[in-house]
Amino acid sequence: MTTTESSGSGDVSRSMELLWGTGERATRGPKPGLTLDRIVTAAIELADAEGLAAVSMRRLSTELGAGTMSLYRHVPGRAELVDLMLDRVQGEGAHVPEPDTAEPDAADSATGWRKTVEKAARDELALYQAHPWLLSVNQTRPVLGPGAVGGMESMLAGIKDTGLNDPELISVIIMVSGYVSGVARTQVHAVEVRQVTGISDDEFWRAQEPMLSTVMTSGRYPLMAALSPEAFGPDFDHFEFGLQRLLDGLEVLVEQRTKR
Image (cartoon, rainbow, N blue to C red):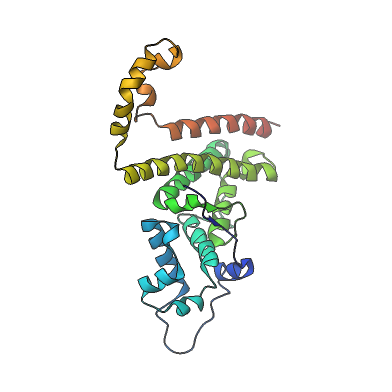
């Protein structure tokens, strides 16, 4: 999957206005059938079904039964629309704690951060699975709307008592997101290759088996040949194994900081 889009590649100021609710002007008379919310929803549904490349202002106008120029009265163009799509899906499931939320007790604080990171990682993986097109967007320079900011606020609320300083807290978010996106990319690619080739995983590996059997009995690759059949089996959860090891490493640092 190649990167085809970049967040923030349009009019960033206009995207921010639309994201934070100051950009769509009210109109007199009856409530219009076409709204910014409907446009973004339709764009996400189209991207989920056919990929981000399928999303165009012309295609959306057809899907919505409206003139193309009608869409431009709500959103300047495709680049800004992608910003809105990203923030909408990033806000799925994000919970921003109320300012007066009670502080957890000491016992909860000791392990609460780990539960927060675990949930965030699993939720993000589920997000990529539901919206594979997210992986085709370069989010190096994100446009921060309520969805993205709310998600970060929720994460920070759960890890703020780890004793890490502010840059380190942000680094934890970056680290977890990088791990999840790598796993998600592999999973999405696996689905894509089956769809494109029409060949199942079993069929693919069976085609290689005759040659590999010969190679593995040659003595040239003793460590590979000694691996058990379960080594590459589907039952081992590589995502959870990697996530727990990442958290184990982070826990060492948290314990050092909180014992000072």
